[in-house]
Image (cartoon, rainbow, N blue to C red; front, top):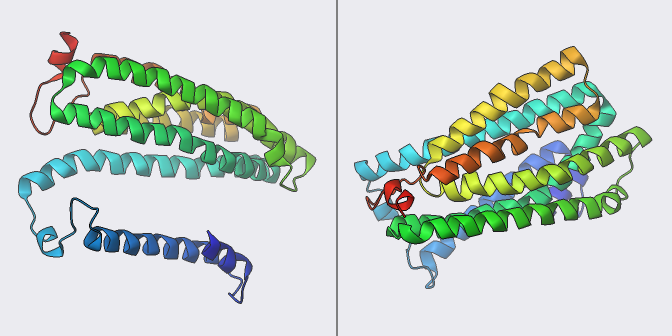
Length: 287
């Protein structure tokens, strides 16, 4: 972040490069993180799996096949998400410059709060993946129910944070009256959207995907983003002339709609994909 600031605004003798500085700074930050990670994995004594470049060159066909089967849907999901965000930016930019500015301010703050359910997803994924991989499926049903309760609490907490910090955050920006009103509206809507997002996202990523069914997550993202939300959002913007609040609500509606289908998927336990070859979903449903 410090490098980006220096290159964007030309601080401490660095050239002022604007958006190009942001890109270069981001690249430098990620390369630095990669070097630190590789060095740590290679030389640290606290890492149980030491990095060995010679062994990395040995490719096992079965492992590669299983890896691609699991990884490719995750890559597709990431591409779907990134492209949907780009289209949403186009939509807000078409509405007005005030709408685009408000979306930038509110969206950035929403991304910070979004890290809470993302963290919940990662933590849940560790426990679910470990349980499925070890074949201890009898404890999985109770774990899933407990996690769902936690996700709901996380969602309510995220909502309260967004509502409480709306005005303090907006006071940091110089916005027109219209842009301020738009940003406040978007923050309010997204505060309640955060409840659904914080529930379905950890379910989809921390339970279903961590349980081995990455294909379902890919299909869910494609359907809700590119068949439901984006097409109607484009119609609402370019044809029907929806107001700003309606566009914000609809473009985030997938976070609510997913709650129903994702929760149903979780309840079937058909998402269990144990690559090690232990019990199947029938063992869980039969409890």
